Structure formats: structure tokens, C-alpha cells
Length: 239
Ligand SMILES: [Zn+2]
Image (cartoon, rainbow, N blue to C red; front, top):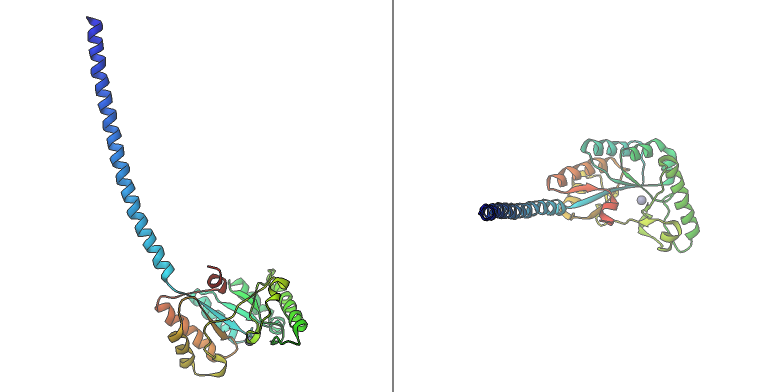
């Protein structure tokens, strides 16, 4: 009899344990479902934020022909104040004249590219001289920064694709040219860019003119207000 009662007690206890386990299982299941739902909605919010960030257009400002002893420094001051990085395509002859400006560009996180030594246009007759200028300019920049130069902006856009493998360099042309070199009208240069610009544009300017300094900083301020962000060229080319 005592044995039979023991069985009953055991069965009752077993049922209790089973009920408790079932309760715990159901509770965990509900919690998991809730947290899964929460995670899904969190994910939705996160991906919306990411989309928003990606939709903010990126623009690269590029400056050719420098460094210039006054205007390049003024552009660097303006960029520093705004926390913006740009890309400078420099000539070897100016690198040798103003190495301290190259050092500053490098230390402040800007990208430095090659614009030949004497601002030479590639033609069918000067291939070797052109290549020699690229090598010489790379060496002048690397001596200051300690890093290889990857990007080249060929003057007037004349380029030979075989240099890319021969020198392990990548050409960077442009998509917006405000012709800053032929105008001193700051408002005109600024509006030429602000009106035309779209995301992933590469803007061609020259850190060789006082009007470019003011126009470039105005362009940054106006387009930042519109929601654009400014990046160096590799973020446009390889993202
Ligand atoms: Zn140039």
C-alpha cells in the first residue's frame, strides 16, 4: 500500500515537474519570439539609418598644380577648420620647392597624388620623358611622406593605360570642372559647382588662385548644408 501511494505521489510530482517544465518552455518560447520580434524591428531601424547615411552623397574635392606657398596653406587651414579631407595632385617641381606643405598635407590626412614633375602633357612623342617625370615626382613625395604614391592626375587628362601596370599607379580624372583657373569670380565658380554637383562627383580645382581658396570653402559650406559629405578620391573610386 505504502508502495502504491509512493507511485501516486511520484506520478503527482512527475506531473507537477512536467507542468513546471512546460510552463518554463512556453515562457522561454514566448520571450524568444518577443526578442526575435524586437531584434527584427531593431534591425529595421538600423538598416534605415544605414540607408540614410549611404544616401548622403559623397563628393571629392581635388586640387591640382600646387603646392602654392600661400593659397595651399589657406585651403589647408579652411579644410582643417571644417574637419574635411581632400586630394591634392602636386607637381614634383613644387614638391621640391615647398616640402613642408606636403608634410602638412600628409600629417593632416589628405591624399597626395602625382601631377607630373613639370606639368607635362603626355603626347605621342614624349612617353619616356612623361614616365620619367611620374617616377621623379613619386620619389619626391615619398621622400617626405614615407609612403608610395598611388594616384596620378595626368595634366589635361592625357593618359596611357600601360603606365598603370608599369608604375602601379591609378589615374584619377574629374567629373565637374568649374574652370576656376580662368575666372576670378568667386560666386561664379561656387555656383558652377553647387548647381551641377551630384553624389560621387570629383571636382577639379587648382590651389593656385586666391579666388579658388574662397570658392572651395564656400562650396564645402553650401554643399555640407545640403547634406553632402566630402571625402578623398579613393572613397569615390573604390566604394
Ligand atoms: Zn594641372
